[in-house]
Amino acid sequence: NDLSNLKCFSLTCFTLTNAYDNRLIPLLRRMTYLEKLTLYIRLVDRSTFVDGTHLHNEILMHMSQLHRFNFYISTQIPIDDSVHHLSDDNMQQTFNNIGYYQTSCIIDYYCSSNAICHVFSLPFIFNRLEMITNRIPSLIFPHVTYLQVVDTIQFNYSFFIRVSRAFTLLKYFTIINIMSPLWNFEEYEADYIQSNSIIIFPHLISLNMNILDKYYIEQFLLDTKTHVPHLTELKLSYRNLKNVTENFTRNATRNNCANIKRISFCDKRDYPNELYIYFPSLEIVSFSII
Image 1: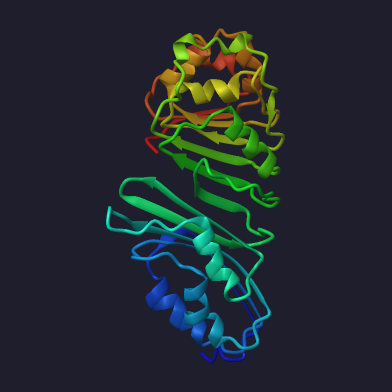
Image 2 (image 1 turned 180 degrees about the vertical axis):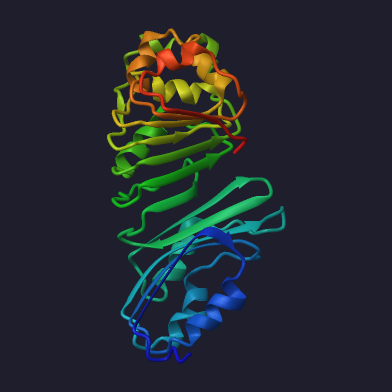
């Protein structure tokens, strides 16, 4: 098909892909008279990050009529001690050099063997973000309804405050953290600590905390810490939920559990009657290893 007369093209791919260099770039180069381009892509199996210089040389310079480019591109690459660590400013400069000043860049070396770079145009027009770490930029993401955060560093109270302010329409929240917080949960009497204000997630309907320390479950279910008036779905460990709710008797977690309709557990298939009594709106209980 002749793509040279195409004026507008949009591609959104939420799944990770390795088809960028050998399939997408050749396709885009055929759109020589494109005027508007929108890309949301998450890349793997590359040795380098996609930066402004790359986008200019491989795509933009071949589109002389392009006047609007909305994009989100994340690149995950393997790293070792020989890899030079770029900074956010290094990456931002590659966009400034080609005249794209309304962009933001986040580079995270979130473990010893992997790094991820997020580059995106501003304002952020997309509704989904994944693999975001503690380093959330001081921006507002007004359209994001799905957020996945992941880190080897603990997420603390101030982090969740920043999330609630940056993602004002957040509906689906997945938290992945393989390290426990600094404080000892068993010694943390969160019911009685009033020094921090209550965090509000007014639109949150689904919370995925399947592989977390039980601290995070307490952070979201205790009504003295978080207010989630529309929360209807939980994905988590049965053992942790049982502990946090004190065997489904704890009054301080009842309010945030009152509207839960669906629970997916990752570690148990048989559930006591107390579970259904404690969650009065519960309709579906399931088991999932994911």
